[in-house]
Image 1 (tube, rainbow, N blue to C red):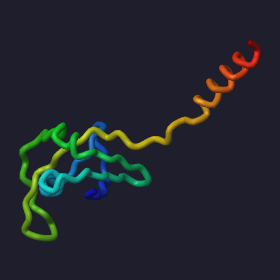
Image 2 (image 1 turned 90 degrees about the horizontal axis):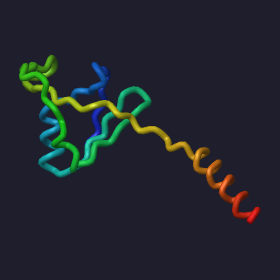
Image 3 (image 1 turned 180 degrees about the vertical axis):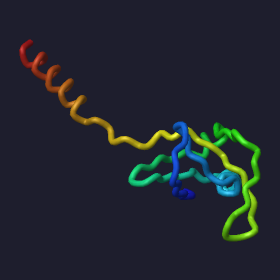
Length: 99
């Protein structure tokens, strides 16, 4: 998995540099994106659903690399709610016991 840290979420989307995106496609790896303490994982199979909203070429401040941005909808991982299943199981268990 290729890991990327982003600092901004804009209109519900996160942007990564195109050369990171292309590397993930070329090496057939998933992409892990973190923002603060939240993260999301984009499996390799879903990488082609990315959008490029602008064709603006950005020049890096630190080296001579130029890049464009590729955007993904920000859907951070959320821990499954295990209490809901437990309540349902307990209710059905009581019904079964009363039969």
